[in-house]
Image (tube, rainbow, N blue to C red; front, side):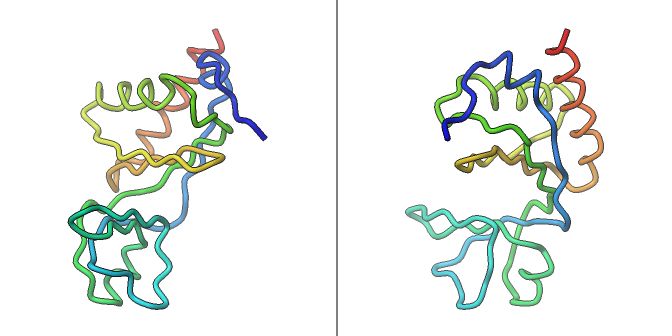
Length: 132
């Protein structure tokens, strides 16, 4: 079940899938019952949530950074070196911030709403370049 560690193979096999909906980042003291965030991360200052904007608005939760989630459809190892750095560097070169989140099987990129098509094009460009 180990993921790929080789950077060249990761980049050459890179494909991306855009998730439905607009996600947002929020912070709460505790997660309200019945809420279904995409991600929950506890920090000293509060609990960070990534959730759909419509869910945040329906619950009256203040949020920031409306974004789209792109899943990198390659099973990267958690120990893989340089994969997210390369992707983030290419996006940064185009003036695009990205908030990456790594799951066990995949990495996910949260890119600014309205720039998802550009981000997908950059990812495809990275893969083509790595394929030679």
